[in-house]
Image (cartoon, rainbow, N blue to C red; front, top):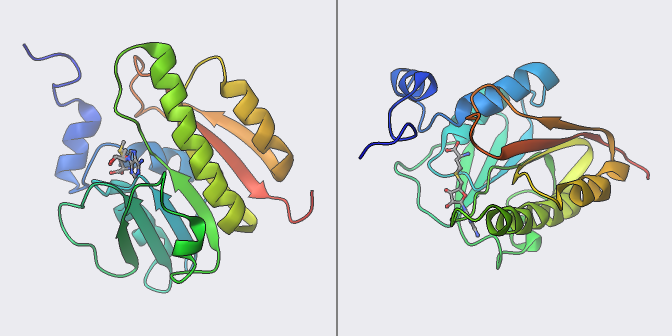
Length: 199
Ligand SMILES: C[S@@+](CC[C@H](N)C(=O)[O-])C[C@H]1O[C@@H](n2cnc3c(N)ncnc32)[C@H](O)[C@@H]1O
């Protein structure tokens, strides 16, 4: 039986019409419109990038002079062209050093990484936090001063400790639930805005 989630909603239909790989693009677009994350010529790392709608969006924002490195354990449906470089890998075994040959540093590190969910809230929360903390390790190694870190987390009791760990490194830390994020989903986005050059 089809559930509410299976039925194409407003954002799914819009994504299909506008030829984006998924409705997730409207979450990033809303956050970018509010917090101005990207500029022409920037280098952006997108962790958990498949099927690729964030890659499409960020490419158009950074333009041909920029660089967008996407990482996912799944392949992309269609091979991306410049400025995107796709690296197929499991983020839990990949190291930040392995991305340094593509760029020494990045102006933004994004993570829409999502674990396989089992429906038990606390288990899904912990799995998503493990991925979010892994994304934070990449950001710590590769994010430039002034850069932004955006990461998805499934809300739960240990989220506030993660926020507290990140807070000292940024001018602002903001928790966002963009309109395209389904109300019934526990996903939220944590934005570390403008990394400090000195702690
Ligand atoms: C919600 S999707 C990302 C959607 C994407 N932002 C877009 O716009 O199309 C989450 C992705 O995280 C990836 N993922 C989950 N665990 C991973 C891991 N350990 N290593 C690499 N990718 C992983 C999944 O394969 C999946 O493609």
